[in-house]
Length: 59
Image 1 (cartoon, one colour):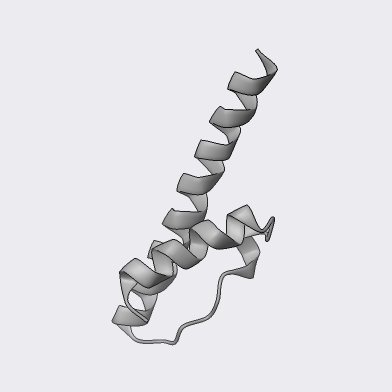
Image 2: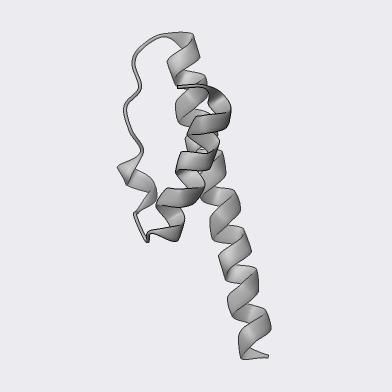
């Protein structure tokens, strides 16, 4: 999986209400570590966007 795919997968996981702790374990290589980091970044970015939407909708 490329880091772009991992990023998108993290965003989709957040949209599906999966927890951040559900991050896949890609492997033990340095490249795999980058994929985990990108997945978490995608999850975090989507979480921030969703929180911003919630604030705007409640205001």
